[in-house]
Length: 366
Image (cartoon, rainbow, N blue to C red; front, side):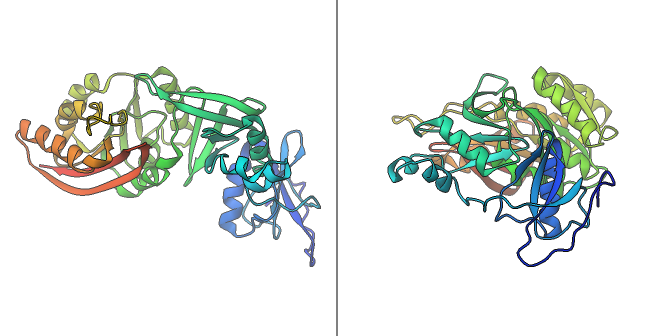
């Protein structure tokens, strides 16, 4: 459907290549919708149409996705891979072997681990050519500090690091130069939305910008979301409004230890999410990584959790200790609280760093 009445729907003929013109800020949402509708043509590139719009290639005029107009797009066929684009720029096979093998498109920003790749600026320009809806490419250099702040560098594009990323229908506004967003946690974020039941009382102890809070609230849960990083908290509040869940999310800018006593006095949680974790890679002479932060909050998590409630504990664990270490820590904390635990599930979410895995333990606490 046209969003401004200016659209035209020409009849498609053999060989005709069509594109739906959409506003740049909503290009990612449009592509997701077109893909779901079955008319997105991934053999051609998204291209700039006007200063504020892009032409998204389609196989037929959309029936369910909003657009400004449908136009004939002649253009070049899409170069399928980053290797194609780099080879077109004269890169040798040896140089291409050193180029990044993975990256993520988050709204209008491409986030990439540049590694030891030669000529990062050319990699950035190639990624912009590959992903026509993107406007900035950021090289990611790591996460540091108690607030887990990212270190990034603009290597191509207009340099705007603020964006809105849509994932399984949940919208995340963020500034990727200021807050962390891990593409590798996508399945876990979606899973939390599928796991909760409507009207559950949930405590998200380390909410960030709403990574798990938003999908749970969109599923009907009532979530108390605690975040002490002021920048992340600002985006948390913005995202609550952006996703129309303000009646189901109660955000607190605080240390979760300070929130738990009042929270538990009002009513204890059906579910507690502990999504914070921190660890260093194991040293050669010691297979154990330095203690991470998540287990240090288990006493507060247990204070907040009702008997029969479910705890989701995230940890960065050395490969040699998956899943023994997080389960041992959880069982020790539960015994200290004179309660019982049943391990429901364990999952390896992604590689956190070399030799260290991001894992989750789900447990029912009586």
